[in-house]
Amino acid sequence: MYIMDGNTDIASAGTAAQLSNTKDKVAYLRFYGEGGSGTVWVGSSTVDNSPARGIGVAVASVGAIGTAFEINFKELTGGTVRFDQIYGNADTNGNNVVWFALCE
Image 1 (tube, rainbow, N blue to C red):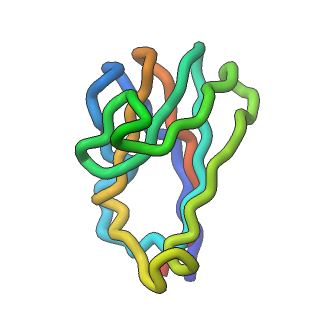
Image 2 (spheres, one colour; image 1 turned 135 degrees about the horizontal axis):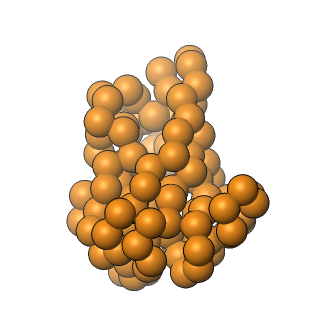
């Protein structure tokens, strides 16, 4: 296993952005929102800025660590998810999804 981390800018609120374009197999993902205000969302390519299509967390100010959400794919499904299938979205232009992944 190995660690990947990053910061995905959501330039246009309401438009899904890939967290990573790699095909790494994600076993565990932890993310939080950073930026101005609102909520960031994580889900599939259809994630929007509502709870209907993703998991949301409140955004913290830049430099602060907001409330994080963790998904343990190994524990939930017994498998992994390809990183290029995980997307982020936001309520506000320019918010970021800050993420940490444990990959196989």
